[in-house]
Structure formats: structure tokens, C-alpha cells
Length: 130
Image (cartoon, rainbow, N blue to C red; front, top):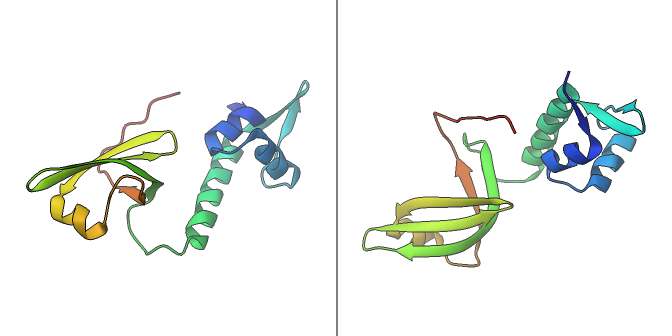
């Protein structure tokens, strides 16, 4: 059974340790004590991550899409070619680069400093252990 400290859980959830502690105190996910540390079982943390994502999806008011991986961020670079364009954005700790048509970039008004959401849908995703 994989166990995570509150700090590790907070890092995976992309929240502060204090927020993870408050969620645990509120009973949003169960914890257990191992010595002087509060630990979370991996299965409970995984279930909470799914529930948290569903809560966010229900409350965000976004349009319906089959692309489940939405990464909100800010455009950091736009390189226009005659026909194509490259758009770079920073979504939290992730750098996302997309190639699209110049026409799409212009229609969407993508420019450095504009808030945008990168939606990723892939038929092949590789997952490695951390």
C-alpha cells in the first residue's frame, strides 16, 4: 500500500500544505498516523483527485468537450509563419507548445499575455513513475 505525507499529497494536488491539511481536517480524505506524520493511502488520494477534478469540471461553466486534459495558462510566445504558427504557453509548471494555422491564431486573438486553455487529447500517453 502506497502512503503519502500531507506535503506529498499537496504537491500532487498542486495546493499548499495548509490547504491539504484543511481538507484532511474537514474529512475530505481520510488520513492515518504513522509516528508523528499524517499519511494518506494512495487509493484514497487517487479517489480524492478524481472527485476534485469532477467538482472543478462541474463548476467551471466551460463548454462541453471530449478533451479531458485542460491546462489553463498564459501565452508566452507566438511565432507566425505564412500559413502556420507556433504558440507557447505556460500552464502552471508545464510549458505547452502547439502548432496551428496562422488563421486560427488570428481568429482566436492569441498573443503574448493572453489567458488561454490548452486542451490535450491523445491516443498514446506514456506514464512513468515519479
